[in-house]
Length: 447
Image (tube, rainbow, N blue to C red; front, top):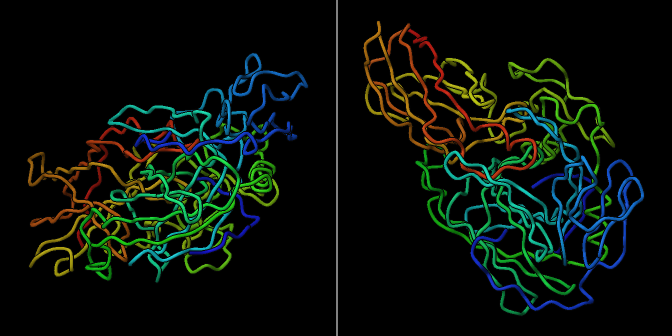
């Protein structure tokens, strides 16, 4: 168990399992109006309406004429109403604001380290096959509860896709169990979260269960993350928390909202080993990006450069083991592709290993829950083909791979995304990684 702590860093992160909502009391509701500059933000609680930017009142969750909102909540316990980009591109784009949250102390859960975070209820997009659907807070939820699962030794993010549960209740009382959504956001990278009902103010205890990693485990990860673990943390839900996570919202300059690019990942400030990292440099610019990170607002950064080489869910393409075959882009996702020589830990005998690492542009966050396949051709004839297997490795990170028994320089390899990433998305990602046509690399096989 750990007490909650507060940080100045701002970062991102509908219940699915029908968990019972705790009995609610009137004194748990937010009863004051709040208008923040730069964006018509209101704290939606038991309010009948909220102040718009122009000063007129409208029902909580509604919008002024011509205005779209993102993250609106309605009714009791809802979240703030925030402006959103009206016509985003079919790509990764800069949203309207940086979210604010309370960061809690990391805990251990068996072989995993879990980093918990709590903020206001907000909208996100779920993915089923090729269908992307917006999920709004229902008004019954009080917080958006998030966890990032990491390797406790290297702090690398672990894709905990299955068996992850959060049991939430008042201290010393039984709680309700929620299955959070695997999510990807620009500020948070890969994590899991959901909007959760609480009830009255007070201290809440969360038991986290992390399931075994549903992937092939290789290298230093072999045998490490093949079992579940549990851990517990606490947080306080009160007026101070509600004010903190709403008043901490930071807006992007209006002219930059909706442009191709991304918010800088807040987790990168801590670096891979917990040290602060805010580098302006990059070794791996996205093909669509030419600018450095901008200074942004209140020290928050956004732009079109990727995060620093030593901070991220995944290593830069240039740092992947083997011979880099290319960084083809499809649906605005980068498929960093490398070929590892025979005799490696990934394959048998003289086979070579083809590894494909799907990642977001700019922030280099992992895109798991994807189905990939390949076809290798030589002089127009098929040499080999098949699925690429999800694998977690300490050097490659989470990737998809296959053994090639006969690889030659000049062979063409077509990479096909059979199913786009199924992780839920936060604003800025919901229009990307959807239509993902096949891409091709030409093999370069060292002698």
